[in-house]
Length: 387
Ligand code: ADP
Ligand code: MG
Image (cartoon, rainbow, N blue to C red; front, side):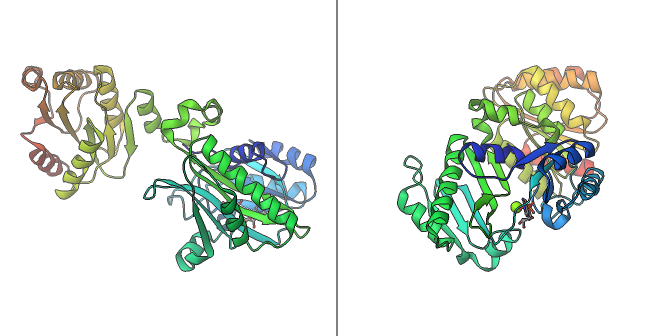
């Protein structure tokens, strides 16, 4: 799960990280009102789940109410296209109007989960700002890392090392940067983050240390235990098909191809996609109906797949263990009656109650339903049908 910058700023502020004053707005008038309250120089920032906003023109420094109005109009009326979005870009539904600050240096500070080392890693750099990806590519030594013991967390000596890497010399600033680092790590642990990033953390000419941009991702499997995150969840930013699937306990990920997949089990879904690709096809989605799928869940899965105008063929691959083949067959029949299959649906069933399932399907005599003997046969058939 992702949250917006303004929400990440709240979590950081609560953990003792200094962030400039700001307001979230949903229309141009509110943006102007927010400016009147904050005054002076402000920065208007699109709240979207993608970085690279600065370069795309969606972070704008403004000195007057008129400039704020122009910036807000631009951001609400145009889609933001950056290196982190597709060519279609993303829409900004909210903007942040934040007090602008004088920047002397920009730093980078982040905690992410290192899956290989199985622990969080803290990364800092004195070359923060909008080019951190370039730094990582061209000058990786400029990013200093410390791995955290999952139980002990951030140790004092690590704070010393990391803050030293920022090149700060004034005692107050060293202390302030240490506090930011501890705050960031605290948020990471407290909310089960997959990523918590401040970029940039800045130093003003007066020596103040402030976080002016933040990004956070959370482990979806832990969101249930954080009421605060649940409240921050913004469904309008999610893929509607993926949301719909979630509500029915289905794991669904939208992909670019045209062969819809309905599979039970994540590993089997991966294998199914591999075979589709091997035989020259492209999957339209990853859909795992799970082990304990109900008839209703499976019908909803068909609805989601068949609602997709890109889908020109479907592969149903069920290995009945806990999930029963006849349950899936019943769902197939119900879906066929309800929606009608306008595209070929290749079905491979194996395992628990498979005989009963085959009988049911035969009796139902559904148009467009093509039985397959095994997975290779199924993949070949569906690829041939959509070719
Ligand atoms: P993104 O990472 O999406 O490009 P940022 O919030 O990091 O967006 O903004 C990009 C750049 O805009 C920052 O590196 C900084 O130079 C400038 N900027 C952002 N917020 C402020 C602010 N409050 N005051 C002054 N400059 C800012
Ligand atoms: Mg940034």
